[in-house]
Image (cartoon, rainbow, N blue to C red; front, side, top):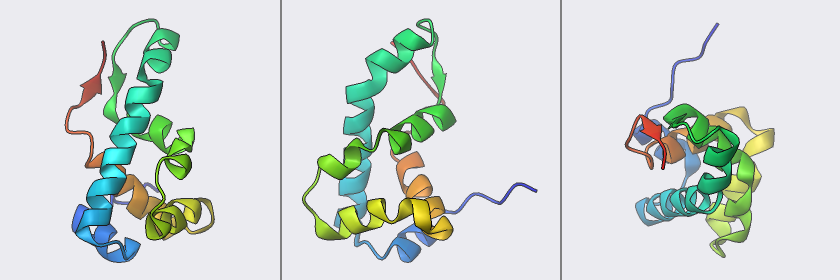
Length: 105
């Protein structure tokens, strides 16, 4: 059974981040994508990558841990693997950072 995607407002509430921290988390996610995109697209034969895969790649890159000094964001990101609901919240917040359906060169 597939769980329903978490809405952005529900994710923000669950994350306990303020709006500035949510925007910073999304900015960090885009920065991680900028860092890994070339390698990911090259590994994919230069073909576009669907948004869902971009989000998973960004979440898995774990570079977000090194890209900020905000203690609340770090705690939220670092707790992700051990708390399923927070993992879903982070995924919803990061998904909202990527407005397009596919990403490519």
